[in-house]
Every structure is written in C-alpha cells, then in structure tokens.
Length: 312
Ligand code: UDP
Ligand code: MG
Image (cartoon, rainbow, N blue to C red; front, side, top):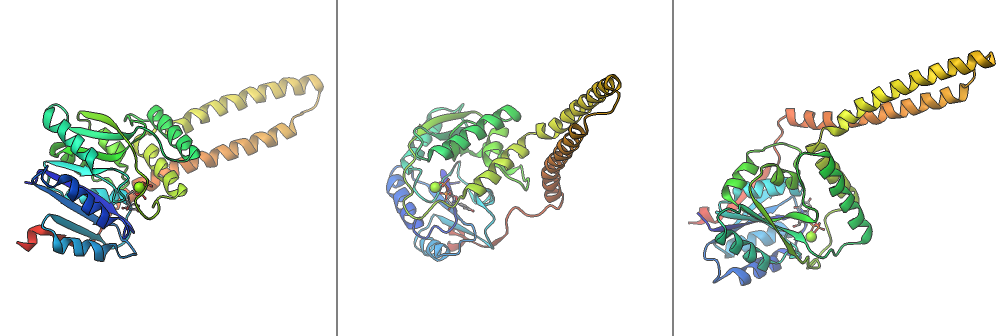
C-alpha cells in the first residue's frame, strides 16, 4: 500500500501537467518515500493524453485513466479516488494553483493527529473577481441555510483524506455528484487550514460562469429538498390569499353594486400561472436527477487505464 496518492483531474492541461509532475516530485522526493499519481484525463482535446503517457513511461509511480470523453471534474475525481490506493489520498488540481507544499503540511497534521481524518484547505485570501466572490459567498449562504450538510466557505476539493473516508465517499455512487457535499455528508473529523491560491501556472480556467452556476444548482438540489416543499407552502399560501381576495371583492362588489377588479383578476391569473411554471420547473430539476439515477448510467467511461503495477 502506498503512503499517499495524488488524484489529479486534467482537462486540456497540456501546458500544466509536466510542471505539476516536476513540482510535486521536487517537493516530495526525499520527504515521503512511497507516493503515487493518479492522473485522470477527462477527455482532453489537446496534447494532455500524449504528455501523460510520456510521464507514465518514464516514472514508476504513475497511473493514467483516460476517459472516452469529457465527463466533468466530479466524474474525474470519482475515477481518481477509485484507482488510488494511498493510505492518505489528496485531490488536487493540475494547474499548480494549489501548492504541493500545502499537502506536506496536511500530511504532517494527519501523521500527528490520529483523531483527524481529513485536512481540507480553504482560500485564506481570495484572488477572484469581486462579482465571482459575491456569487460564491451567496451560494454558501443559501446552501448552508437550505441543506443538512455544512459547507465551509472558501473550501475547495483540495484536501487530504484517510482511506476509510475515501471508501465512504466511493460508496456513494450517485450520478449527480457534488464532491464538497459528499465530503461533508460522510462525516469524519475534518480540520480546515487556510492556504494561498496561486495564479494559474498556464492556460485558462476550465469553468465558465454558466458551468459554475449549474454546479451551484447541483449542490443545492443534491443536498436539499426544501425547494420542493417551498412549492407546496406557497401553493397553500396563495390559495388562502385568493379566497381572501374573493371575499373582499364580493363585499366591495355588493357595496358598489357591480363586480370590479377585472384587472386585479388578470394580474392574479398571470401571477399564479407564473408561480405554477416556476414550481413545475423546480419539480423538473429533481425529477431529472431521479431519472438520471434510475437509469444507473456509469459516472464515467474509461477508454484505458495505464498503471505502474502492470509494468512490473
Ligand atoms: N477539470 C476537469 N474536467 C472539467 C473541468 C476541469 O478535470 O470538465 C480539471 C482541470 O483540469 C483542473 C481542475 O479540474 O485540474 C480545476 O479546474 P480549473 O483550474 O479550470 O478551475 P478553477 O481553478 O478555475 O476553479
Ligand atoms: Mg484552477
């Protein structure tokens, strides 16, 4: 059994993977005797697979899982964890925004504290645009209010976990994955440490605002059924309000001698119609996930897996 595994999701990272590999090797060689890399090539359309293959051929501690297409970072993390065998396993990005020195710090904490199962890093000082920070903070506020899992603001997937916790995460094979939620859901004792996010070493972020927005919806819908219940509360509220409105309209109508409020009625119809489709939409979000889950689709499909174990 290896002491430590790096699980590295890679999507179009031709400019970063070599640097990542050399930097980690520089920091870890001589300090940790027995560690491995599990690179997951998430359907990259650039030279990433060739570069990973070259690294695999030269090194004796590298595994490469090649996806048949882009399945997304969540699926890549799942495949990486499945193929890792370290007593400690670290999820880390390929772009060196997360320094390998921090992993050494995490390892020290696990080595010296038997009661801690996971060390997760959160961004001490944020280096993103103000708008993005605003939306991300709002997301944490909403999800922490709505759901039963507690998400630590600013914490990413960057963390080092003991094997039992990895096994627990792997035992949850749901199709719509949201790792931060899964890590929190499985429990275990997590310590949060601040770290400084580096500028991306090369290339650009693989997340667009829309991709992040969909990811946020994934997190909320995946961990809270409150939006579903809100629909029924609002329905009951609206019915009450309209009965009240009817009574008032009848009284006023009787006093004036004619039925008034045509405009109000049109407004109400539109309002309720709008709400109806909103709630249908919310139900649709959940139904879509249930539908994907009952199909039992695989979370990812690997074309091939290169492992140093097969070299021996
Ligand atoms: N990534 C992936 N599949 C995707 C998108 C991203 O495997 O569909 C990987 C990417 O190669 C990187 C990590 O996920 O190693 C984080 O992505 P990125 O650095 O673009 O995100 P950011 O740091 O901007 O949040
Ligand atoms: Mg990055």
